[in-house]
Length: 131
Image (cartoon, rainbow, N blue to C red; front, side, top):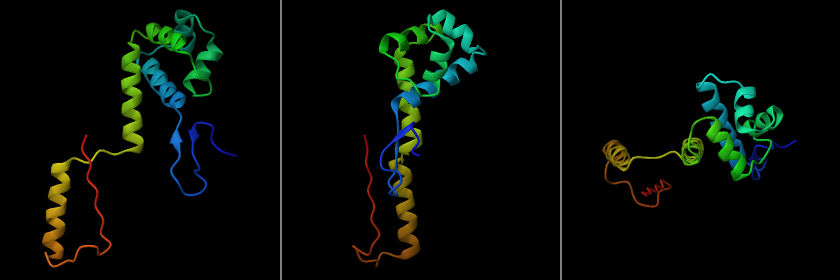
């Protein structure tokens, strides 16, 4: 059975993508635990049920923006901070950042080891992207 927290072919060797609701839930749970608070405490302040908050944290329920806002208020955090943190988690897990200065240094080391006579198109492909 497939994992409901990710989407994509996965079984065919392609990388699956995490669902946004799973990543948001991870951030909410992490924030709550860092504050040393219980599900019951946060659910009471956010005016949602404990089972519902638990399912949001586990990525089983897709919370509306209003509910996410209420949970963020209960956790004393901005909704924008939740989204930024979730974005960082997604980048960290699935799209490692390569610093161009480090990549250039590694390329220089590789050329020093191989020598400059290595012909282009020899199966060694590189792609550097910058945002």
